[in-house]
Length: 358
Image (tube, rainbow, N blue to C red; front, side, top):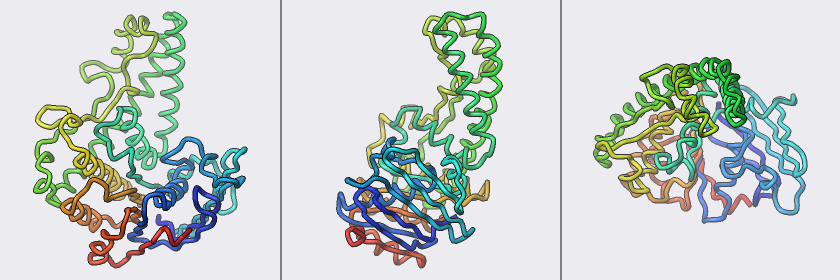
């Protein structure tokens, strides 16, 4: 589902930009502050109605303007997406001239983003890893978000009862929490196992262990949030005293995580920043491959600031990954030294010097 054309007005540092994109590789380069990340940020909004940098969309409106307007054309299906954000109004999204909620963008134009926050995937808080996992599941599985919202609504209600010492009313909510929790946990486990399988395929495909030997010793596990010794319902019921003392639900799918170990040691204590970045890119690429190969979805692969903290050895490995990814790829770099290597390997390549777009 590639973006063929985009139009950007009054967004960040840009007055007006119109671009025709390649269905293959799209490479944006320019100096720091030139607007590379802003362009990728705008493209990401087409897939989510949100920014990967700011929770406040009004802050993305160019200084001294009242609103930004984005327009994107999906040449494969002929869809036109128009997004308008006025400083003082909610986001307004049109699909083929019909208003839709921004939540529909996730499946309409799916995207796997890899940016500054995801570069420290192994070192991030569990909540961040859960969000990335859940985002991919929401793209691939239609009812997932309905069950997700139902679980967190039940969790909020249970925690409210705990705070008000209404213990006798909690048991009915334990059942609801368990029912919805088991559903989203099963979805998480399935997608995690699929990602792990494709992660291993990518490792073998590019012979990454020859460059990063830690990959030969890494162990990746999914933790469901309460352990496998008991059912979720039994866990909720047996831990009610501890939950009551703390006034919150201590265990459950809202505490789930993806854990990484190297020779039994937490990976974040072992890996350098460059190794973490490369690992994070590999894991995100594996999720992207699951969407394509298992669910027949073609998400855009987006990588911001690909060069920082990576050397030529890693460049070559990344090229090998990109060679086997047939989806649209959009990424940025501070200079165009990477482009010569790409142009030798790919036919469908477009390069954009960002300073010349402003």
